[in-house]
Image (cartoon, rainbow, N blue to C red):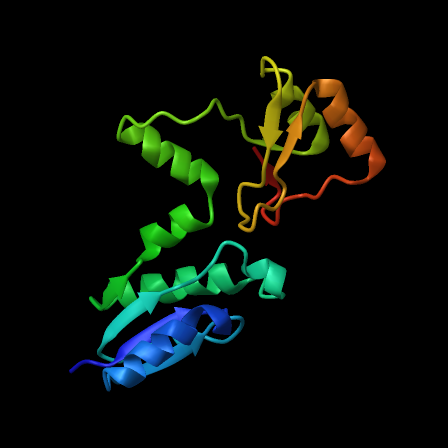
Length: 173
């Protein structure tokens, strides 16, 4: 039985996996990637790698966990290791822009979306909307940055109030 490697940054999310692996007597090891190092000259161990990285990792003070995980996944894949939730899955996890592009590629409609970086460009994007609109973070989770605005003026007031929360990647939708 190959060893299972669980790649994550949130202990609470792997509790059910720990219980299931123990019950089934499956060999596993956790790779907690809130920080660490990656020796690109070394070969990864044999096994199955299960990626549980989250777009909201920064809310647990694990700001660079997805970036480190992206490197680890590329390394694993370059060595032909079996990866569940591979690099492409991580790319979709951490970018709503990538999610919407993938949906469009398969003919699945999504609400009109404009991506912007910087307050002036977010306002400019809002002017492209007709009627009420929602802003949200490109990279988030937990509903971070989701706000409903009835007008561009309401969004402008939100910025001026200091209540605007920038996305960890700087991109607002």
